[in-house]
Image (cartoon, rainbow, N blue to C red; front, side, top):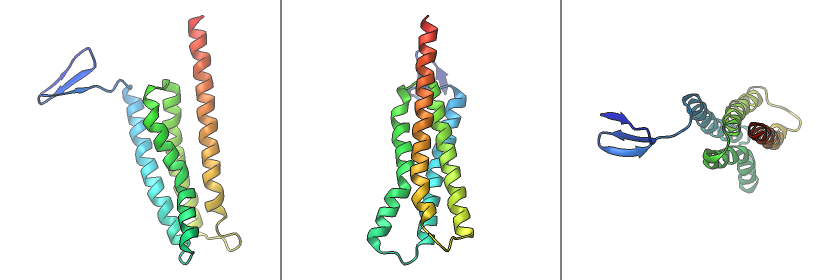
Length: 154
């Protein structure tokens, strides 16, 4: 039995839970972003291991941390985003989709057509570009959200 109450409480088969206040499209975007980030992280690390068969273990550990950094950062941002403005949340979830899918495309392209010179270039450049893109998009969304809030007060 499912009953909705006005005070954001949901009862499902006798268990009472708080209802998430996110709008339905935002919840779907978040779910798609989480799936993209998890698939992107797993696929990126798998392609990294495929690309570097006989690298020293210490170098591989450094590359794993380096390649995983944008995904971990997005997951940490997602964990803290529930109290943020809707615009920032939507931007974060969109960046989760873009980084997850984009990384798979870029690393997959490198796996299909590997580079002869500077073979690790893709694995060196994609994580910082991803992090800078995420930071820029979230900063713009936060600034726009603050401006919108100020204009609503006036």
